[in-house]
Image (cartoon, rainbow, N blue to C red; front, side, top):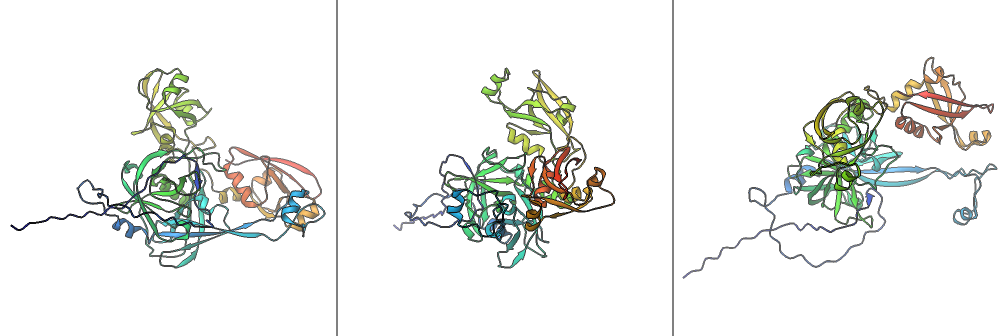
Amino acid sequence: MKKIVFVAALVSALVGVSATVITSTWINKKTENIQYVQTPAPKAQWANLSETGQPVDFTYAAEQTIHAVVHVKTVYKTESRQSQGRSLFDYFFFGDPFGRDDYGYNYNQPKESHGSGSGVIISPDGYIVTNNHVIEKANEVEVSLNDKRTYTAKIIGTDPSTDVALLKIDETNLPYLPFGNSDDVKIGEWVLAVGNPFNLTSTVTAGIVSAKARSLGAISNSDKMNIQSFIQTDAAVNMGNSGGALVNTRGELIGINSAIASTTGMYAGYSFAVPSQIAKKVVDDLKEYGVVQRALLGVQMQDLTPETAKEHNILTSEFKGVIINSVMSGSAAEIAGIKKNDIITHINDAEVNSASDLQEQIARYKPNDKIKITAISDGKVKHFDVTLRNKNGSVNFVKSNDELFDSLGATLEELSAPDLRRLSLPNGIQVKKLAKTGKFKDKGIREGFIIEKVNGKRVNSIEELKEIFSNATGAVLIEGIYPDRTREYYAIGID
């Protein structure tokens, strides 16, 4: 009797998952050394099957993605050291202070440093989304496509709060990735991370979504606001992947890879991506307004847990929602009637179970947008109609840095090293010319005035001045001096 032998072979990609203590690590820094570790060949594994019972195929998503993911290279010019008096430590490590003048300043030539990361083409006319920390303070940005073409990129705008930035290159008919809907992403869903780790271009790794609305409290930036509601995956992500694509198996862009959880600075099991719904809103605002139109509810909050419920004397058997710790005076929440100890459970129809959930929902809106909030207030379910406001407490859209500086009505110039020496100043930005109308002229500022500090912070460049203005609310206090040594203070409204 003939024997019939049926043989079935299934092949699966081995996806490693390892636990780690979470400390956030930005992943665009240049790596000096790569260590190769020999491991035994993996044993055969059963393939993971899709809902239809078929093996999951990553090839379509990979082919759709790799040509739309770019390599972002940056050049930073490090300013020369400026200090009043140098210690023996400085002499030991930096040698004789050649170029140091009698006032104690050292004016050596600026030095260049380099960084790299990734980006995603999101339109055929050359718009590219990446992370803010990839291009922050860069003097030059170069973009390399998968076909090896290179371009100088223009920074359209940045948003430190979400770690998203928008670039533009002068080209057409480019391959691009459409934004998917990160709200539809499910825990356990297969995803691909595509980027340029260790300067290795077009690298694709696979994993699953292991959590949503993840907050990493250790990550911070200079912006007072810090919106964190990451998609957590176990797709391998390393230095250089920052700004790259997180896509689903249909090749849709569902996130921008931003951070890893690691005790060593290298991938150790978990990576985090900005959800596409947040990234798309930021990109749309930067394209249209030059600045993110961020809506605020105006509350301090924390997750509802057995501990926080006890702390606030809240009797409940269900720990769902976010407790309001305080409500800002004149905020959207106060005007709507929301008060301390209220528990917010829904923003419109979206359930919120954590502070990061609430942040993600509010981050989708602009000032003057109207939303419905469901909350438990005084033990009863209540519904609030809320009109969101901007950081200045107004329903108006905020101005971009360029618009803001146009409203000042002044031509500014960074003082040269010889000018600073002559004036015995460590830093300063001079008002070279005033327009016929503008906020500077209205406040009595005259041509020649040298801005030294804004809100108590020394400013060394026009970019620093713009950053301080963009993060301020209501008004700023400018401190400076005229060439005749007359010191003056001016308060400038910025709304």
